[in-house]
Image (cartoon, rainbow over all chains, first blue to last red; front, side, top):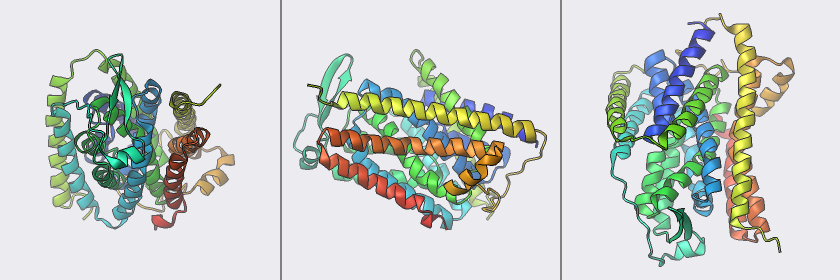
Length: 280
Length: 126
């Protein structure tokens, strides 16, 4: 394949990945890795390096807008970034010693979990239990604009959320994805944050988390500029267009179709991993 | 009095993130055009990972190779700028928390920066 053809194919594929990733809430990273590895035969190490770059681009781009709207809880984000960055470096280091096949299998499993998460009914909690001592100490309780009304909320189980974030960060560093699904579990289900706050804060943390592992990947030669270039440009453009469309789109059906497609991709990744298709 | 509020911090950080993404992606785009002009017809192959294949593996190597103005070096510089955008965001947040006299969060920002500095040392890469 010539450099020009490769660039064009990856650019288009990444655009689609970014577009669908933003419409379904799954993120571009989890789609771009199967596309590069299964579709174009790119080694999974390069695919992960390129994907982590696209995670930084999209999450930073959208975080800019969310932060200004006052939806993001920056204190929660900063505090939990301690956990996600430690995890991210840990994950990127584990990836050195882990066989590519295992990485592919873990990736497949996380992909299935993430797509299932996009289908789940979102229960919006506004927790009013102000008893958490840690939340008080770290000044995490805050308020957010909910349909024009500034709504106060309290945070619970900070320790549990922190631990879950360590895990989310590790997977992000290991697989080169944003692991937004896991971050939302930590903040929605464990810390009981309102949905809008948890998704935007998760997105806010993604850039820093991905940057921590991207540096490790850079030093290991996993960030090939000729692959990362079309991936990050494509995913960023796709995600930007997706976010514009999202405002007036009914995504329920799309999410269903997409979950099926993604699950099939995941099964293929797992199968190929188990049968040694990723180079032993 | 002009007290700095969370809202001000949010605006500054939001702007920083946007400028970072735009500048780094513009750099990547310039690099891409130069790279494709010189190498469009070249055959590329990424089937096996070889850690010696990419020679732009450190911040230092990117800057020492930059004067040649090769497409791939410019792309890599853009990617580096992108990686440093969220890191700059932490520095900015630390400064803002300091002005706000929220020293606990200044400390938290510094801890996150130290963790990232560890990955920068490159010791984990091998």
